Image (cartoon, rainbow, N blue to C red; front, side, top):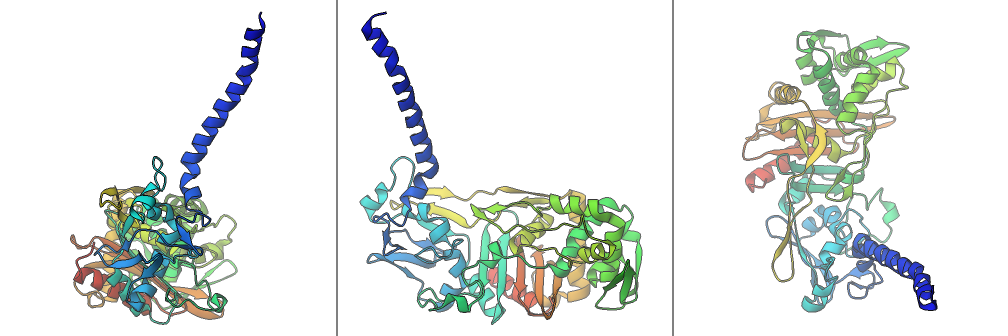
Length: 456
């Protein structure tokens, strides 16, 4: 073997290493390019730590929520709109992680795999984003929730469009607080990142499990004396209902009946239903990670199993997740993922992204979903009254989540059965008392805004 051949063989490891390195570089560029380009150290995109060359953010009706003007980000002229959309629009510095300025900063910058951020240099700004939210609906939610902290969400259970996302406490992005520590979870989008004791909204999960596993549940009768002894303690009910059917037990939110149903079902069946509905499982929506809803009764004694069946014990639920469960019920059993972005336009005015309906992992057998729709409609017709939801053909369930030493959280979850308003809603009002108060009123206010403005 001559020297040239030997030298050629010697170069083979070098060539192989170069090719491996090139492959790794291409992979990292594909996987991390958007992240690298949107680093705050990139002076093409950021000025003094604020995203200054991003495109415009619109709501679904074309209202401008944020834009770049003279090298800085400016927000809506309406203070109420700025506050109501704070956690979904975000701030220029990206402090609010679920806001569009942070979660979608690579999209706003105009980055793509082929040309990087060339559009910034050519047009002086990135892509425009049209969000699915209605600014008016967010303001309606903000006004109705008043001084209470909490979360309000509404989405189209057929397409996934997230038409309302409001979280409190919030602040005016034009006048941020000097000491954020004075506020509890000020930067937290409670719709996406909060978890709460669900109260009686959890009876929907227990009821779905019963519909699947107790064939004659509809004809069963339960007895309520205001409390029921289970094991070493009592499950307390908010009323004395006497003999009560399954449907009326849901209508009147009878704790005694649902504690008995939980005992009949047992731990394994309740855990199986909870898993099928997305509990104890990471869920993402349009790239944003939701807080994980937790349900675990494997070690619960009989008394706590009863409490878990009515929505107390150690169960914690993310509001957006609960909204998705109601959406699956409304949609014939097939859940869909909420979509934050409706569309994205390049600086040249070309639509480069349009939201598509994506199914979620939440699937409910069609027969059970149908019966659950009937029961939730019965709740409104027989218990709350259609006058609480004019012209909405509403289905729903309240929840009063009891807390040790504090006023209960107020919950409402539901959906409209109107063909022209296929929307599911969730409201959590912290320490606001009964679910039939602040939460229900807020749900009606935001749904009426969407009905009036023909948003779906």
